[in-house]
Length: 247
Length: 382
Image (cartoon, rainbow over all chains, first blue to last red; front, top):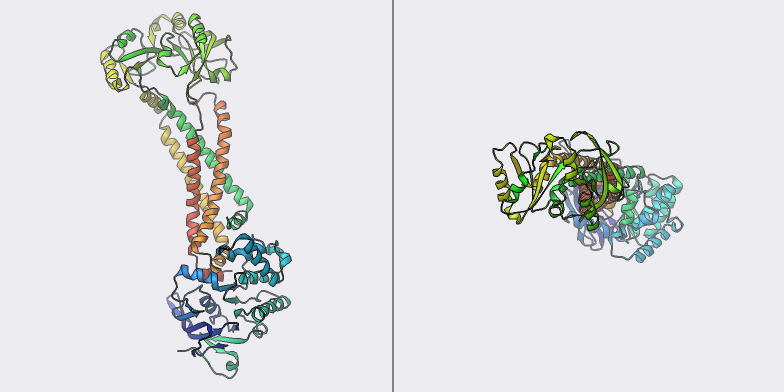
């Protein structure tokens, strides 16, 4: 269950409280997120929508430990990540977060197999164990027959599926998807989203996704809108009620 | 190593650039090895000089001759063990480009003073009996395909000029590979017989051995004092000081070589550093992805350093391998114009260490940049 009102829940996998993010640009302070609250349970699938510059990607970066907030806290599975050192955060990301980017961001000189294997190079798994995990992940995304292909030899949809395999291969706590279908045609986007659905439904993965596409967002359990730095539930937005955020 | 696929895949990303960078390393390493060999060659005279040998020359210049009669007076100085004398002949064999040094020697004492230049006894005895006899260094004999018994004509413009004929009676070898095996020796008596009257009884320089090397300074001073205020004052110094002084006549070779070497390495550092910087900048987003999925900044720095180091080691090995193959050929092509060119193992080790140093230095700054890149900003640039 996803909540944005900051009410106490002992089951939350991800708990965000009073999250602020301010940037300085040319001496001017720009507040992107303002006292944002969010609770996401294990197995939830949440979509973030909002106009450009509303802070969707900033929120995703903060949740993924790629950026640090100006104030507030983020707790994931009991670990408060906002006070972790950079090196601890790097280790934490390797264990807990799977990233799926709009532009796929595969290493072009590595094969699909080698790209998916990358996160496992940070573990103590043997070569044969790594191979088994990679084959499984590529099997889940339906690319068992494309293991030796380089990204340039794959279609956009296939590249994004390789990215998904790379994101899930180390069995992270949750997945962060930044416009995963933003660079795909409708058919490929549907295939990728079917895969994300499967990860949530069949494998119980927790997914947080930023998208501009209402069709894609409709596949999530809950869609949250970011408006002026605060989160608003879609249903309440329609009623004109701001449900969470400003503390 | 589990990261090797990633490192080598990145290295091979731009093959032409990789080949050119490795090529510049190879050329620089070859130049380094060649310069080091030349520097060693010039210093070798001092290195192989006998610790117990002194050289006596005219105080003003080595080109001035000094009297042969000094020999007996020098031998009377306490501490002098043996003495021999030489003259520079300055002749040409067939063609001026066929340079090799010819010395007039004193056959009675040559072997006592230079025991490290070895002539088999039977050849030496034949030489002693032959007024026109000559001994050639092994390298010179090999260069001109001479064999014992050959008649060797040498023309000179000194000592009345003309063509001098010699019989090759022996071939000498150095006890160590770095010793000079290019000299050509012939007898004092034959020389004395043919030279003009006004230079008879004059020699080029004396070389003497002392009983105890620690006495060298005292003996040198005693010799120079003895002939002070005479028409031919002397300058006596150890053989190594003499050799070092000889090299100085060519200019400050060491400074010249060090300067060229430093410029080569600095240029190499800029070339490789620039290549690595471009390479890193081209894949900032990829490095950011690696950071995002859990690779530490240090791991990213390691990847960049591993790449620059691999380029450096491959280029370095190629350059040094080229030097190993080419320097003996170059030495032959130079036809004795430079002292013996020998590529010592220490030069190879030093070259490889220098390559590793340049490799690490050139990868360090781009690597630090990659390590410090803000993941969020780098991903936004995609």
